Length: 75
Image 1: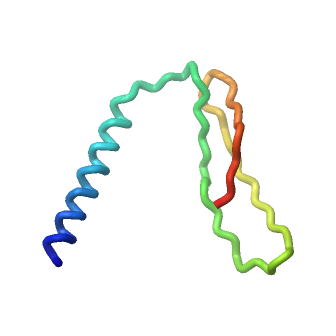
Image 2 (image 1 turned 45 degrees about the vertical axis):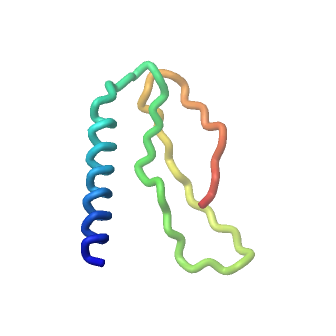
Image 3 (image 1 turned 30 degrees about the horizontal axis):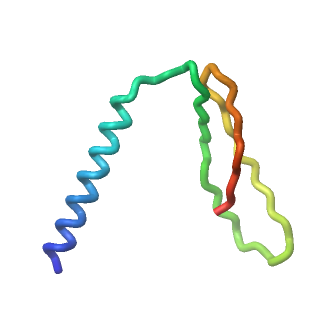
């Protein structure tokens, strides 16, 4: 059982390092839209059923091209 946990942990670390390396190797292209969201998750306090709740997410475009948001989903 311990060996399976160690193998899964090492595999997860390998995937994380591989993904991090791949992201760092991509050159920054400022001629395209680059969405920046400082807070992409918000946890509401307890909510009474039927009462609407609102939270604003601020999205900044740090690229040079227009940022077009076509689809938004709640989680």
